[in-house]
Image 1 (cartoon, helix red, strand yellow):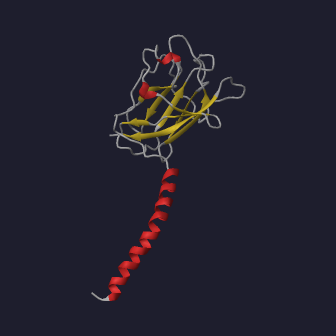
Image 2 (image 1 turned 180 degrees about the vertical axis):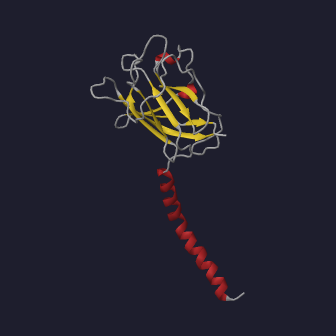
Image 3 (image 1 turned 45 degrees about the vertical axis):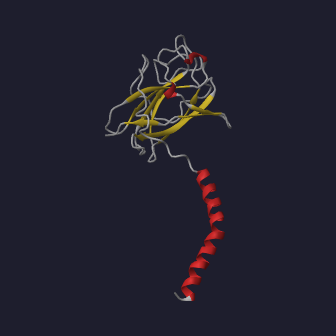
Length: 196
């Protein structure tokens, strides 16, 4: 073996030895800024629940249910619709309806009712208020999710730490929102649906 071929690998090795900690630091910092990859298919699809007596078809398409002068604590609900294989579901219909701050539903019009479609990454975002309580139920949102040309998933989303969760007959802990309080109230939930 010639001395030239022996020196090149040694130089490469030394360069790598010094560069590796720097590369590791930047890779770790970059990975910390990325959203964690969701786990799909591990626990099956999002559980279905009763729509309740208050669903109304043909709600307006909108990303905010809040209106001028509306009472209630503002909250943003956001997340993704994904298939059981973890793929984003673009163009999925996500339809929300809920009680107002006093626990009443608008059955005459479309107050606190609306639908939207997920973007190319399967993301949805809803600006609304925290729903009020009414007898027999814990605090919740109603949701219908329909991937393009597929079956509708009807379900409900719940708040962690609510006293009524224990006594609500249909409460499901798999449907709890992840709540954050930084700069306002934000809830996160990712739906997993059948697309095949």
